[in-house]
Length: 557
Image 1 (tube, rainbow, N blue to C red):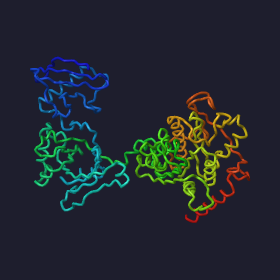
Image 2: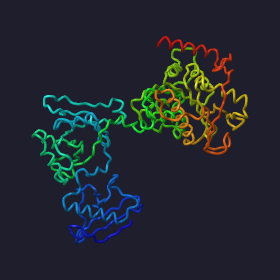
Image 3: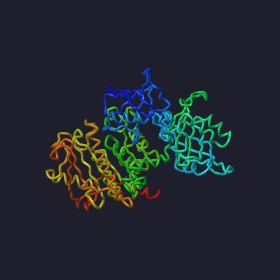
Image 4: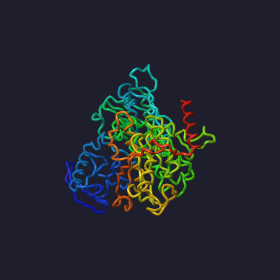
């Protein structure tokens, strides 16, 4: 500890002090023990709300206006101490609007519609709120008595919807009182000691005053807005008022709309992403991270397709945690998406992507066909198997739907991400054809180049952070491509190329680590998928199954 002590002159006479800094000074503010004139002991500042259990007083509250700054010295600390002592002598410390928040971060969320009604009419009424078990989040759901007319008493409700309530953990119902005082904040008593009794006296009738004493939750509304919430923590009315009351500044907000506020500010018309639909084939280490990144960007509809369960060795590279081991990966990723956006629409398909001629009506491929025919649809393939990638490529080309293909290579030292824009870019088969025809010009990851199998090797070792970088590149390319399908765009730059090779290690297709290379691969006019060739890219049985699925979709639509 570092400390400075001495005597300071104030308007109420000399006072002794001791300023104490924690060892990590100057990153944390100093604390002071304010001593009495005879040095007998510390003065109890608990009523001020800045005092710790040992009666030390924090001079710098944790807010932008009063907080400690690294350039401050003992001089600023002494100036703050003198100001507080003089305010205390005049019974002006602290002012009501500066009543500190509790040491626990408690968020009281009041919907904008309810906040407006509380300001405009009525003098008091009851409120109903839902809270989280830990007490850190409280959301007002309804109020009554907001009309100036006593005849109209219908409650005003602002529901969140079942998915949001569940995701936020709001499982504790609390009733309280709200009261509107015809004053502004500068007209309130300057002493916190008299505040509770003063508010009670302002209420219009004995019923309201009695409810004020009985309720543990009270929302106070002034002429200049919703000012604070009083929460009584003591069970008995005889408990000291200063120990019973907790002051919290309410947030006037539509909570669910704030989730994507910063995203909306960046993407302009990005709310169109709510209607976009992304199918992800393979939600392992890459696919799961792509899904979460797109959910954070505001994509509102997903189709997840994967047959596997989360294994222990997946956890270090997956969005799932140890508490989700043995759950289907599609369920794990669905949970992760809904933790970000509880209103997201997620279709879980726990199956491998294949075209099964037997029982084609239940083929999981039908979900991908729905996406490929959606004007705001896109398919991401993160399986790194030629068989699945070929099927996805065929569906995207025949459905005129963009497709994004992603894989990590080797031990996640490298990655490749490319997209297929039907009629514009080469398709997946074109890429394979180019790599087979000119392997020296178009690098391909295979046993000859890297010593491990290409595109089909499951369970390769690698770091999650390396996989994550490929996933983020994939998500960005997906977002850029969706921006070209949404009216008004996303104010997001277009992709520099369609076939990207990335390396965290170097020595493959780039000069060194953390480099990317854009490959300009031409379309193959003889390509059997997107060109004029007559060779079928799928087996004849698969072609028949795909045709049957297409016919079935047309009948249902």
